[in-house]
Image (cartoon, rainbow, N blue to C red; front, top):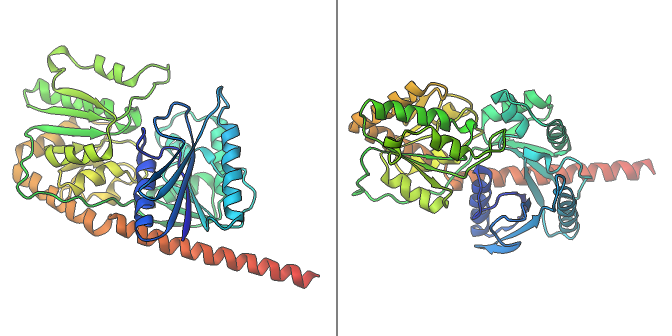
Length: 393
C-alpha cells in the first residue's frame, strides 16, 4: 500500500502526540513493506531538513513564509504536490489530522482522504471553554465536510467531535499505539522522582501539578519533579515556563526541575528510572505520554477527564485524578510514594494493558484494515459514478 500522511510536526524537531503517532505508524508500515510519504507545513526555523529519509519514510517539510498568513502559499503548494502524487499513482490513500483544517478547501482527488481526530482546536477550545479564532473554527469544519472517511483516536473524541461539527458520517475508532520497549527485571528506580512530559500550557494541568508538588514539599514529603516539554506562550505573549518558575520558592528550586524538550528515546529511559509519572490534563484525545510511561512499568497518574478512563482503570493499572484539584494530585503522588507494593502492582498491570491493547502492531493492523476498506469503498463509488454517466449518455 502507498500511504501519504499530512503532518506539521514530524520528529525529531519539537512535536506533540500527532508527530509521535505519525512517526510510529509510518516506520511500522515501511517495516511491513508498504510505501509511506509524509508532508507538512512547518515554521521557517523548525530544526529539521526540508527533505529526509527516516528509516524508509520519505519526509517533506514545506516552510511557512513571512507574515501572519505565511502559511497560505505552502498550504496550496502542499495540495498541488499531493494532487500530483495521486494522479501519478504514487499514493493510494491520504491521512490528515483534524486540527488546522489542512484539507478544508481541497477539490476531489483520485484517492480517498481520511481525517483522523486527534483533537482539533475547536474540540479543545470547547472542552476548555476558551476563545477560538473564528477562521480556525470554519476551516476545521470545512475539513470534516471535505473528508471522505473519518477515524478517531478515542471514543470520547469521536463523540464530542461528531456533536460539535454536527457530522452525519461515523468514525472508526483506532486507539494510538506505541513501541514496546524491553524492561530489565533488575531495574532499580530512582526514589521519590516524578516525571511530567507535555507542552507547558494550562491544558496540560502543569500549574495545578506544581501547586500539588509544593503542597507535598511544604509538608516535608521528599519529591523531585522533573518537567519535560517545550515552552509555550501565554495569552499575553510571555513564556509559560518563566511564569511557572516564579511560582516556585527558592528553597524548592532543586526539587522542581525544567528539563526542556527531549527526544522520545530519552523520555523512555526516564520513565524506566522514575518512581512515577503524572499527566493531569484537562483535555486529551488519546495521549501518547501516559502510554509510554505505562509500558515502561512506571506507576502512572492520569486524568479523569476526556479519554483518561479509556486508558486507565483507577486503582488497577494506574490512578485517575481531577486535574483541577492540586490536593487530589498531591494525595495520588503520596499514595504511590508511601506504598511500594501498590506502586509495583499498578506499574506491572499498566505495562500488561499497553502490551495487550495499545501496541503499535495492533494500531497498524487496525489502520491497514481501515485503509483497505476505504480504498475499496472509494473505488466502488467511482465505478458507480462512471457507470451512471455512461447510462446517461
